[in-house]
View 1 (cartoon, rainbow over the protein chains, first blue to last red):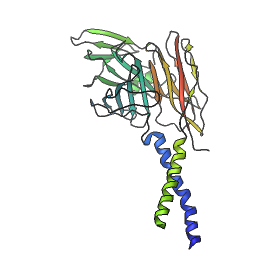
View 2: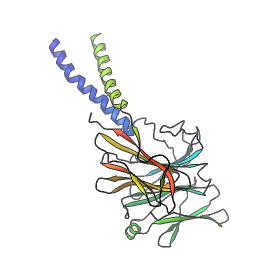
View 3: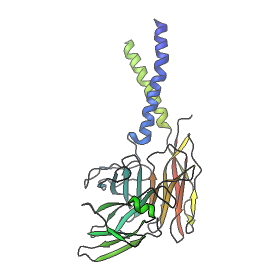
View 4: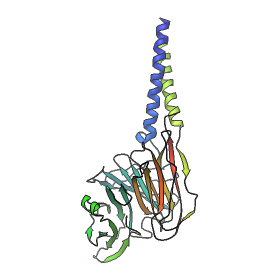
Length: 201
Length: 126
Protein backbone atom coordinates (compact mmCIF):
# COMPACT_ATOMS: atom_id res chain seq x y z
CA UNK A 1 0.00 0.00 0.00
CA UNK A 2 2.82 2.34 0.92
CA UNK A 3 4.62 1.53 -2.34
CA UNK A 4 1.52 2.35 -4.37
CA UNK A 5 1.28 5.75 -2.69
CA UNK A 6 4.95 6.44 -3.35
CA UNK A 7 4.59 5.54 -7.02
CA UNK A 8 1.54 7.82 -7.30
CA UNK A 9 3.46 10.68 -5.75
CA UNK A 10 6.40 10.13 -8.07
CA UNK A 11 4.06 10.67 -11.03
CA UNK A 12 2.01 13.39 -9.40
CA UNK A 13 4.78 15.73 -8.26
CA UNK A 14 6.34 16.37 -11.71
CA UNK A 15 2.86 16.73 -13.17
CA UNK A 16 1.86 19.35 -10.63
CA UNK A 17 5.17 21.17 -11.02
CA UNK A 18 4.57 21.27 -14.76
CA UNK A 19 1.13 22.77 -14.14
CA UNK A 20 2.74 25.46 -12.00
CA UNK A 21 5.36 26.21 -14.64
CA UNK A 22 2.70 26.37 -17.35
CA UNK A 23 0.64 28.83 -15.32
CA UNK A 24 3.76 30.89 -14.69
CA UNK A 25 4.67 30.95 -18.38
CA UNK A 26 1.15 31.97 -19.34
CA UNK A 27 1.07 34.87 -16.89
CA UNK A 28 4.61 35.96 -17.80
CA UNK A 29 3.60 36.14 -21.48
CA UNK A 30 0.89 38.62 -20.64
CA UNK A 31 -2.02 36.26 -20.33
CA UNK A 32 -2.29 37.12 -16.65
CA UNK A 33 -1.78 40.29 -14.67
CA UNK A 34 1.27 41.48 -16.54
CA UNK A 35 2.18 44.90 -15.16
CA UNK A 36 3.65 46.26 -18.42
CA UNK A 37 0.40 46.24 -20.33
CA UNK A 38 -1.97 49.17 -20.23
CA UNK A 39 -5.62 48.19 -20.06
CA UNK A 40 -8.21 49.93 -22.13
CA UNK A 41 -11.94 50.38 -21.94
CA UNK A 42 -14.66 50.96 -24.47
CA UNK A 43 -14.93 53.92 -26.79
CA UNK A 44 -14.70 57.17 -24.87
CA UNK A 45 -14.64 55.60 -21.43
CA UNK A 46 -12.10 56.13 -18.72
CA UNK A 47 -9.43 53.58 -18.00
CA UNK A 48 -8.63 52.67 -14.44
CA UNK A 49 -4.87 52.65 -14.40
CA UNK A 50 -3.16 53.41 -11.11
CA UNK A 51 0.39 52.86 -12.22
CA UNK A 52 2.39 50.90 -14.71
CA UNK A 53 5.75 49.19 -14.48
CA UNK A 54 8.62 49.55 -16.92
CA UNK A 55 9.51 53.01 -15.63
CA UNK A 56 6.14 54.38 -16.63
CA UNK A 57 4.15 55.57 -13.62
CA UNK A 58 0.80 56.89 -14.81
CA UNK A 59 -1.18 59.69 -13.21
CA UNK A 60 -4.19 58.00 -11.63
CA UNK A 61 -7.39 58.83 -13.47
CA UNK A 62 -5.60 60.32 -16.50
CA UNK A 63 -6.09 57.33 -18.77
CA UNK A 64 -8.79 57.66 -21.41
CA UNK A 65 -9.93 55.08 -23.93
CA UNK A 66 -9.99 56.40 -27.48
CA UNK A 67 -11.76 53.52 -29.17
CA UNK A 68 -11.40 50.17 -30.86
CA UNK A 69 -10.59 50.21 -34.57
CA UNK A 70 -11.19 47.29 -36.86
CA UNK A 71 -8.54 46.87 -39.52
CA UNK A 72 -9.09 45.18 -42.86
CA UNK A 73 -5.75 43.41 -42.47
CA UNK A 74 -4.69 42.32 -39.02
CA UNK A 75 -6.43 42.34 -35.66
CA UNK A 76 -8.43 45.22 -34.18
CA UNK A 77 -6.53 48.01 -32.49
CA UNK A 78 -7.40 49.59 -29.12
CA UNK A 79 -6.20 53.16 -28.65
CA UNK A 80 -5.94 54.99 -25.34
CA UNK A 81 -4.05 57.91 -23.84
CA UNK A 82 -2.67 58.69 -20.38
CA UNK A 83 -0.33 61.06 -18.59
CA UNK A 84 2.78 59.95 -16.74
CA UNK A 85 3.87 61.26 -13.38
CA UNK A 86 7.06 62.68 -14.90
CA UNK A 87 5.18 65.03 -17.23
CA UNK A 88 4.77 63.00 -20.40
CA UNK A 89 1.59 62.16 -22.23
CA UNK A 90 1.34 58.90 -24.09
CA UNK A 91 -0.69 57.41 -26.90
CA UNK A 92 -1.12 53.66 -26.37
CA UNK A 93 -2.05 51.06 -28.92
CA UNK A 94 -2.94 47.50 -28.11
CA UNK A 95 -3.72 44.95 -30.75
CA UNK A 96 -6.11 42.07 -30.13
CA UNK A 97 -3.35 39.59 -30.98
CA UNK A 98 -1.25 40.76 -28.01
CA UNK A 99 1.01 43.34 -29.65
CA UNK A 100 1.46 46.68 -27.90
CA UNK A 101 2.94 50.03 -28.71
CA UNK A 102 3.15 53.52 -27.34
CA UNK A 103 4.52 56.96 -28.06
CA UNK A 104 5.16 59.47 -25.28
CA UNK A 105 5.83 63.20 -25.59
CA UNK A 106 7.10 65.63 -22.98
CA UNK A 107 4.61 68.27 -21.93
CA UNK A 108 1.51 66.74 -23.53
CA UNK A 109 0.41 65.10 -26.76
CA UNK A 110 -0.48 68.47 -28.33
CA UNK A 111 2.22 70.68 -26.84
CA UNK A 112 4.09 70.90 -30.14
CA UNK A 113 1.63 69.75 -32.83
CA UNK A 114 -2.15 69.52 -33.02
CA UNK A 115 -1.90 65.82 -33.77
CA UNK A 116 -0.19 62.86 -32.08
CA UNK A 117 0.45 59.78 -34.16
CA UNK A 118 2.78 56.93 -35.08
CA UNK A 119 3.33 55.00 -38.29
CA UNK A 120 3.10 51.21 -37.89
CA UNK A 121 4.07 48.71 -40.55
CA UNK A 122 4.75 45.07 -41.20
CA UNK A 123 7.26 43.89 -43.75
CA UNK A 124 9.98 45.87 -45.33
CA UNK A 125 12.25 47.61 -45.48
CA UNK A 126 11.04 49.33 -48.59
CA UNK A 127 7.88 47.31 -49.23
CA UNK A 128 5.16 46.74 -46.67
CA UNK A 129 2.44 44.13 -46.26
CA UNK A 130 0.57 46.34 -43.77
CA UNK A 131 0.80 50.00 -42.91
CA UNK A 132 -1.47 51.98 -40.62
CA UNK A 133 -1.31 55.32 -38.84
CA UNK A 134 -3.08 55.52 -35.47
CA UNK A 135 -3.46 58.90 -33.80
CA UNK A 136 -5.53 61.52 -32.06
CA UNK A 137 -6.04 65.20 -32.85
CA UNK A 138 -6.24 68.19 -30.50
CA UNK A 139 -9.66 69.34 -29.21
CA UNK A 140 -9.73 72.35 -31.56
CA UNK A 141 -9.42 70.18 -34.68
CA UNK A 142 -12.71 69.33 -36.40
CA UNK A 143 -11.47 67.74 -39.60
CA UNK A 144 -8.28 66.16 -40.83
CA UNK A 145 -6.90 64.83 -44.08
CA UNK A 146 -4.07 62.45 -44.69
CA UNK A 147 -1.60 63.34 -47.40
CA UNK A 148 -0.05 60.68 -49.61
CA UNK A 149 3.19 60.38 -51.51
CA UNK A 150 1.36 60.45 -54.87
CA UNK A 151 0.08 63.95 -54.11
CA UNK A 152 -3.48 62.93 -53.28
CA UNK A 153 -5.25 63.27 -49.93
CA UNK A 154 -8.26 61.70 -48.23
CA UNK A 155 -10.35 62.79 -45.22
CA UNK A 156 -9.74 60.93 -41.99
CA UNK A 157 -12.69 59.53 -40.03
CA UNK A 158 -12.38 61.04 -36.56
CA UNK A 159 -14.29 59.41 -33.71
CA UNK A 160 -16.09 61.29 -30.95
CA UNK A 161 -12.85 60.94 -29.00
CA UNK A 162 -10.96 62.63 -31.90
CA UNK A 163 -9.02 59.46 -32.58
CA UNK A 164 -8.41 57.68 -35.86
CA UNK A 165 -6.58 54.85 -37.53
CA UNK A 166 -5.75 55.33 -41.19
CA UNK A 167 -4.99 52.07 -42.98
CA UNK A 168 -3.21 52.07 -46.34
CA UNK A 169 -5.11 50.04 -48.96
CA UNK A 170 -3.27 46.98 -50.28
CA UNK A 171 -3.38 48.40 -53.81
CA UNK A 172 -1.50 51.52 -52.70
CA UNK A 173 1.09 49.50 -50.78
CA UNK A 174 1.74 47.50 -53.94
CA UNK A 175 2.21 50.72 -55.90
CA UNK A 176 4.49 52.21 -53.26
CA UNK A 177 2.02 54.94 -52.29
CA UNK A 178 2.29 55.78 -48.60
CA UNK A 179 0.93 58.37 -46.16
CA UNK A 180 3.21 61.39 -45.94
CA UNK A 181 1.50 63.87 -43.62
CA UNK A 182 -1.68 65.56 -42.43
CA UNK A 183 -3.73 68.69 -43.01
CA UNK A 184 -5.67 69.80 -39.95
CA UNK A 185 -8.72 72.07 -40.02
CA UNK A 186 -10.32 74.11 -37.23
CA UNK A 187 -14.01 74.57 -36.35
CA UNK A 188 -14.60 77.10 -39.13
CA UNK A 189 -13.05 74.83 -41.71
CA UNK A 190 -9.88 76.89 -41.87
CA UNK A 191 -6.59 75.08 -42.39
CA UNK A 192 -4.70 75.50 -39.12
CA UNK A 193 -1.72 73.17 -39.48
CA UNK A 194 0.05 70.94 -41.97
CA UNK A 195 2.29 68.19 -40.62
CA UNK A 196 4.67 66.33 -42.91
CA UNK A 197 6.39 63.09 -41.97
CA UNK A 198 10.15 63.85 -41.86
CA UNK A 199 10.70 61.09 -44.42
CA UNK A 200 8.35 58.80 -46.29
CA UNK A 201 7.72 55.44 -44.56
CA UNK B 1 -5.67 14.08 7.79
CA UNK B 2 -3.72 12.16 5.17
CA UNK B 3 -5.81 13.65 2.36
CA UNK B 4 -5.28 17.13 3.75
CA UNK B 5 -1.53 16.60 3.80
CA UNK B 6 -1.59 15.32 0.22
CA UNK B 7 -3.60 18.35 -0.92
CA UNK B 8 -1.16 20.64 0.88
CA UNK B 9 1.78 18.93 -0.80
CA UNK B 10 0.13 19.25 -4.20
CA UNK B 11 -0.52 22.96 -3.69
CA UNK B 12 3.07 23.50 -2.58
CA UNK B 13 4.45 21.76 -5.66
CA UNK B 14 2.25 23.81 -8.02
CA UNK B 15 3.22 27.02 -6.24
CA UNK B 16 6.90 26.11 -6.44
CA UNK B 17 6.64 25.50 -10.18
CA UNK B 18 4.84 28.80 -10.65
CA UNK B 19 7.38 30.64 -8.52
CA UNK B 20 10.34 29.23 -10.42
CA UNK B 21 8.88 30.54 -13.66
CA UNK B 22 7.88 33.96 -12.38
CA UNK B 23 11.24 34.46 -10.70
CA UNK B 24 12.83 34.51 -14.14
CA UNK B 25 12.14 38.22 -14.68
CA UNK B 26 12.72 40.24 -17.84
CA UNK B 27 16.04 42.03 -18.05
CA UNK B 28 16.78 45.33 -19.73
CA UNK B 29 19.57 45.63 -22.30
CA UNK B 30 20.74 48.87 -23.84
CA UNK B 31 21.97 48.41 -27.39
CA UNK B 32 23.10 51.97 -27.64
CA UNK B 33 24.50 54.14 -24.89
CA UNK B 34 22.08 56.71 -23.46
CA UNK B 35 22.43 59.99 -25.30
CA UNK B 36 23.97 58.48 -28.41
CA UNK B 37 24.11 60.85 -31.37
CA UNK B 38 22.57 59.50 -34.57
CA UNK B 39 23.51 61.03 -37.89
CA UNK B 40 20.70 61.17 -40.50
CA UNK B 41 19.66 57.63 -41.44
CA UNK B 42 21.97 55.99 -38.90
CA UNK B 43 20.76 52.86 -37.13
CA UNK B 44 21.87 50.41 -34.46
CA UNK B 45 21.01 46.78 -33.79
CA UNK B 46 21.09 44.38 -30.87
CA UNK B 47 22.43 40.83 -31.06
CA UNK B 48 19.96 38.18 -32.20
CA UNK B 49 18.00 36.47 -29.46
CA UNK B 50 17.78 32.74 -28.85
CA UNK B 51 15.40 30.15 -27.49
CA UNK B 52 16.79 30.89 -24.03
CA UNK B 53 16.36 34.68 -24.14
CA UNK B 54 13.69 36.28 -26.30
CA UNK B 55 13.43 39.97 -27.08
CA UNK B 56 9.98 41.05 -25.96
CA UNK B 57 10.09 44.81 -26.43
CA UNK B 58 12.00 47.55 -28.19
CA UNK B 59 12.34 51.17 -27.02
CA UNK B 60 13.82 54.32 -28.56
CA UNK B 61 13.96 57.15 -26.05
CA UNK B 62 14.46 60.60 -27.55
CA UNK B 63 13.05 64.12 -27.50
CA UNK B 64 9.63 65.16 -28.80
CA UNK B 65 11.11 66.76 -31.91
CA UNK B 66 13.12 63.72 -33.00
CA UNK B 67 11.64 61.28 -35.49
CA UNK B 68 12.84 57.69 -35.29
CA UNK B 69 12.07 54.09 -36.09
CA UNK B 70 12.13 50.81 -34.16
CA UNK B 71 11.72 47.34 -35.64
CA UNK B 72 12.28 43.65 -34.98
CA UNK B 73 14.41 42.03 -37.68
CA UNK B 74 14.21 38.27 -38.19
CA UNK B 75 17.11 36.02 -39.14
CA UNK B 76 16.21 36.36 -42.83
CA UNK B 77 16.34 40.16 -42.74
CA UNK B 78 12.56 40.67 -42.70
CA UNK B 79 11.16 43.52 -40.63
CA UNK B 80 8.30 43.06 -38.16
CA UNK B 81 6.23 45.37 -35.95
CA UNK B 82 7.93 48.53 -37.14
CA UNK B 83 6.92 51.81 -35.53
CA UNK B 84 7.97 55.33 -36.47
CA UNK B 85 7.24 58.36 -34.39
CA UNK B 86 8.34 61.38 -32.40
CA UNK B 87 9.39 61.24 -28.76
CA UNK B 88 9.79 58.00 -26.84
CA UNK B 89 8.51 55.09 -28.93
CA UNK B 90 7.97 51.55 -27.71
CA UNK B 91 6.81 48.33 -29.30
CA UNK B 92 6.13 44.82 -28.03
CA UNK B 93 5.44 42.29 -30.79
CA UNK B 94 2.34 40.11 -30.80
CA UNK B 95 4.48 37.00 -31.05
CA UNK B 96 8.02 36.94 -29.68
CA UNK B 97 8.83 33.28 -30.33
CA UNK B 98 10.98 33.69 -33.42
CA UNK B 99 14.65 34.53 -33.79
CA UNK B 100 15.09 38.28 -34.09
CA UNK B 101 17.14 41.31 -33.19
CA UNK B 102 16.14 44.83 -32.22
CA UNK B 103 16.77 47.76 -34.52
CA UNK B 104 16.48 51.51 -34.03
CA UNK B 105 17.15 54.20 -36.57
CA UNK B 106 17.19 57.94 -36.96
CA UNK B 107 14.65 58.14 -39.73
CA UNK B 108 14.99 61.85 -40.27
CA UNK B 109 17.31 64.14 -42.17
CA UNK B 110 18.75 65.81 -39.10
CA UNK B 111 21.17 64.69 -36.41
CA UNK B 112 19.36 63.42 -33.31
CA UNK B 113 20.25 62.18 -29.83
CA UNK B 114 18.67 59.26 -27.98
CA UNK B 115 19.03 55.79 -26.55
CA UNK B 116 17.78 52.38 -27.69
CA UNK B 117 17.09 49.47 -25.39
CA UNK B 118 14.94 46.39 -25.07
CA UNK B 119 13.82 43.75 -22.64
CA UNK B 120 14.73 40.08 -22.80
CA UNK B 121 12.57 37.36 -21.34
CA UNK B 122 14.24 34.11 -20.26
CA UNK B 123 13.03 31.04 -22.08
CA UNK B 124 12.45 27.58 -20.70
CA UNK B 125 15.79 26.05 -21.57
CA UNK B 126 17.44 26.02 -18.14
